[in-house]
Length: 97
Image (cartoon, rainbow, N blue to C red):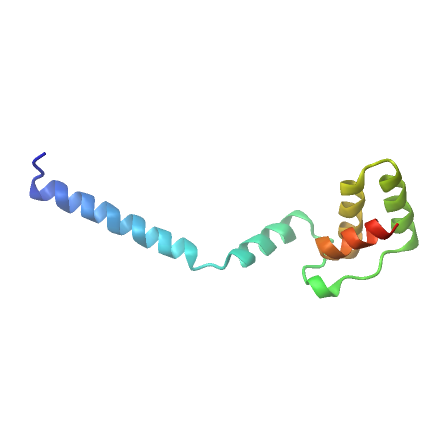
């Protein structure tokens, strides 16, 4: 396989561009991307994990009803959406119901 100089230069240029694009995409922190996506999808959820508020009694009642029907994931999701709690905190609440 005999490569001439222009072909080698082209391959080297493509490799450098791919490398630089890869580094540029890694410079943004993944947690920034995820929190931005979550905020765009669910604007009522508080983005700070420690800023959650205790669930209202009606939320607890709805979550308990969902749990009794075997819909634990939906119950956890409801608690998270209504309170802004983390996944673990919401799951702990649902587990205690």
